[in-house]
Image (cartoon, rainbow, N blue to C red):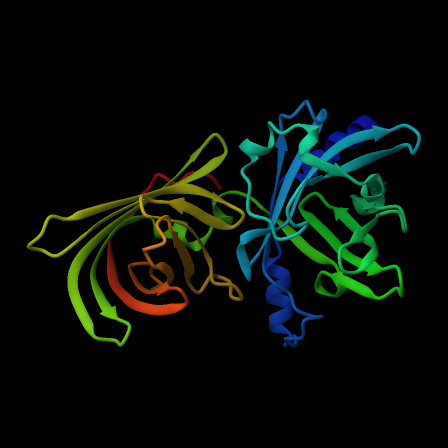
Length: 360
C-alpha cells in the first residue's frame, strides 16, 4: 500500500464514534480497585472529517468525553493528515485550539470548527504523530518522536508529552502522559499510561438507552418541596422521537403537563445525539442525557439540565425503565446555588412505540 492509499485508510479508520465500554466492564468484573492509577472510566470519542481546505486536504476533528465530566471535551483537537516524503510516512499534524485550557474544554460543534482559519490554532511540530503500517496485525501505529513534544507549563516548567496510538479496522487504542523535564516525574497521565481500548460504535444499536424509550408515555407527576412535602400532583404526557437525517441522529421530545383544571403546558426539546449522549435544548433549559455507567445493558439514564435564566433551578434527573420497556420511573432534583429547592417524581406507562428510528 503506497502512502496515498495509507493516508486515506488511516483517515477512514480514524473517523467515527468510539467508546471503551468493554474495557470498563472488564475492569469492574475482575474487581478492579478504585485507585486513581487503575481506574477505567467510561469515555466516548467522536472523530469527524471536515471540509476545511484552508487547513489541509484531509482534516479530522475529534472530541473525547469522560463520564465524570460529560459537559466538557477532555481532549479536543484538529488533525491534518499529510504525506511526509522525507520520512516516507503519513504525518498527523496536531492543531491545538488557541486560548483556553489544553484539556477539558467546552464542546464545539464541527460546523463551527470547519470554517476556522490557521490563526485559531497553535502548532507544536514536535507533537505531530507519524504513522507506520503493521500489516501482520492489520493496524497502524502512530507515535510522536521521542522527547520532541516539549512545551512550557505555567506551574511545572518544561514538560515533555508522550503519546502513542493504534488504529485497527474497528478499534482505536491510545495512551497519553506528560513528564516534568526538571526531575523526570509524571505531571499527568491517562489511566496509568496503560492503553485505553476503544471499540467503534456503529448504528442504532450503539445509541444511548434513552433512544429506546421512543413513543408516547402517560404518567402522574408529583412535586415536592425541599423538605419532602407534597405540593401538587397532575398528569403528564411525553412523546419521544428519534430520526436519522444525513448521517445525524436528531432527538425531539414533547411534554404536555399541568393540573387537570388548567390549560396544559407544552414543552418542546430538540437536539442531536453524538458522543454517546443526547444533547438537547428547550425554551428554558439546555442539557444532556447519557446512560448510567458501569453496567451493560444500561441500568438507566442520567439527565443534567442547565437553565437559560439564572433565576431557574438546575435539574438533575435519573430515569429507570422496566425490563419489558412498558413502564419507567423518573426522579428529578432541583438545585439553586448549591441548595436543594425541590424534587419531582413521575411514574409513567408506555402507550405507543415510535417506529421512525432507522439504522442498524
